[in-house]
Image (tube, rainbow, N blue to C red):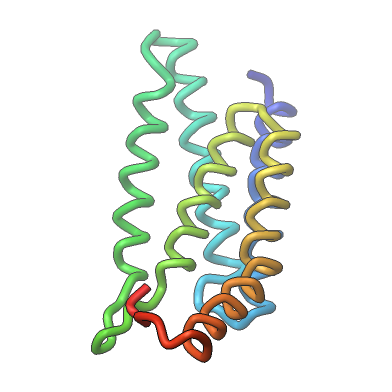
Length: 149
């Protein structure tokens, strides 16, 4: 892999993370532009490093990707908090996890797929948020059914 490919992969990952983080920042969530950009960038760097190392020493690129998933999972666990009966931060945690996956894709050279997933993540967090609220409001206000959903 030459320097140009490296730069393109890293910029693609960072751009995807930035877009995901921009949506989160816009909705005033804790993990915004910097967090998602850094997670996507770091994931891409590890993937690019793994490609570089296997070209020299041999091995399996998926081993480092697996460790990225584990490391980001640990980071995500720190985002989830419990306040009384409520659990907070699940969507933020899932978004960070997705930013890492997008970074891995861009780091592996799957640019179109990474940008498509970025748009899908933004759609889920931005548009489906209103659908989620509407459903929860209907369940709470509506039929008197059990509210433990």
